[in-house]
Image: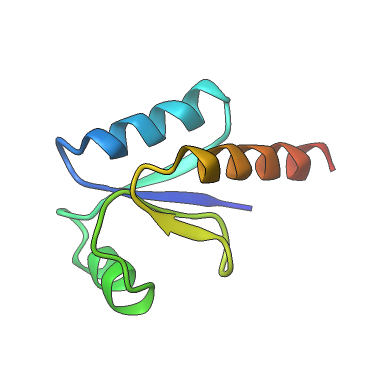
Length: 84
């Protein structure tokens, strides 16, 4: 499982989201949407999001914006995967 967090510089929600995953010691890849045009196209055109951060856990589990409940779900899911 590979969690990807699409962020923008200066984005409060982006910073808080990455902090939560870091604090939980759950690995993720951070992609700067302002530096990666293909990533921006993916989250806007394919996933349909217009707000950063966009967190992609897998094809069915993804969201945009600062969402504490989904962050907890994703961390729990990642820990189960690591243990499993």
